Every structure is written in structure tokens, then in C-alpha cells.
Image: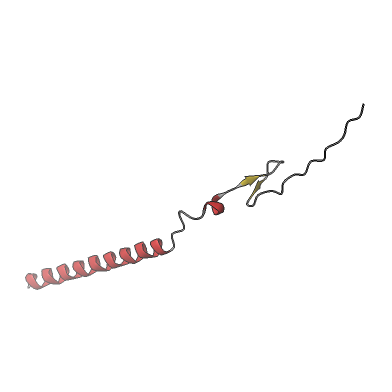
Length: 71
């Protein structure tokens, strides 16, 4: 009688092990599909304006007016 119980327990352990392995493989595939590492360089760039604020897009170029100095 103990022999049939041992084989039943072994089968149950093997099933659990296979289920865990399948779940782990599914999680691995999902992580690979949703991986956003190594994106575009432009997505990772940050710009700083003249006041020290961080911007996601480059600031507009500052136009300086030249004043004529007359003595």
C-alpha cells in the first residue's frame, strides 16, 4: 500500500515542478516582449534651460540683440 502512495506523491511533485517551469517560462517571455531597455537615444536625452530646469525637448535658441556702442 505504501508503494502506491509513494508513486502518487512522486507524480504530484513532478506535476508541480512542470507547472512552475511553464509559469517561469511564460513570465520570462512576457518580460522579453515588454522590454523597453536600449530605446532610442533621443528618448533618453534631457536638456537643461538657462534657469536650470530639466526639459524633455531642446530649448529654443536664445536670440541675442547686439547693441551698438557709440562714444
